[in-house]
Length: 456
Image (tube, rainbow, N blue to C red; front, side, top):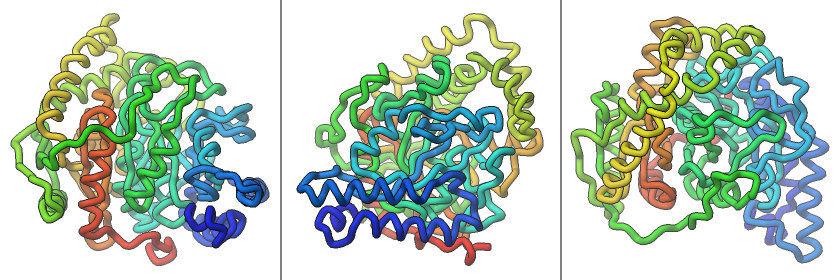
């Protein structure tokens, strides 16, 4: 699309109009986009056309419609994060990732839904309502970037912005049958001027990343989103392409001793065969460096840094699902000692080192996204459901404090339920994730975009 717009084969306004038509046709069934302004979208597109008419280059995403998650500052829009408490928190400027999309020439199509506080792997809240999975409304669309995953799967925009602190890009991609990249910590700049500075745990673990219907579009989204921004002191000017590495992958079916559904083992073995067909050497291994301990570190950095304030805010918001999640972890949070954060950060360095050595020897790691197929929507409404969900999501939670890139690649359907795999590489080696992802994608993916009417 960007190439055709730059070549003046189609105008950015025509592309924007088409995207708005698609949004109007399908969004009512899924509630993925919860705020958009059609006239502003067309004005942005017309500015791209005007720049092209003057002989300018609007950027690599010239005229491509993208969506932004409602937890990122976008000038003139409320940074709600799914909260009634923040419905009037209107951003006065763009966050770095939104600014980077604009500089790349993207047209900002709309704002996508998230659960309250971006807390769950399910997407509903008291302000914007519930987002449905366009492939099957009985399944969760994932979370917290559930609106982003549902939008991309349904053809609303070409690339979606998401955020990931415990799988919030990777899981919606998995649940909706698209691709999603959690980049390395420090790769994509982040900051919201509208909100207080985040605690050290979220600073080290929360990242923005792209969701899209093809691996080349993931790569293009990453390129646009990763541009420098001096407002993020954690941003690293690492090259997007690293040194050549042998095409070697390690397959681990049950890392950390996690249980997996038979369909997930089948998907992993199928993905390994696809890699081998593309010339990769794949070796099955019994386990990885510590994952359950990394999972514990993630939880400590989350629970030990401002938990009481979040719990009080959840009570004020009155979101029952958020309160339920926080209540399930309250005793653990209250039992943490005063030096828990310091101990977790100290131990984190050891685990990061072990993983760095492992990934130097195994450039790509092929593992599950989740231990289960996408959950029935609302599964985490009971203590038993919360425990089941957190065990299945071990890999999503555990990889966050390690700072590693991880890519969800959708590979097929079980009935109409999506299934996929996760690819992990060393820090700032998103290029290896994407190379392996392209080889797996070439073996087949679910049809997309989908019409939610057909899924209902």
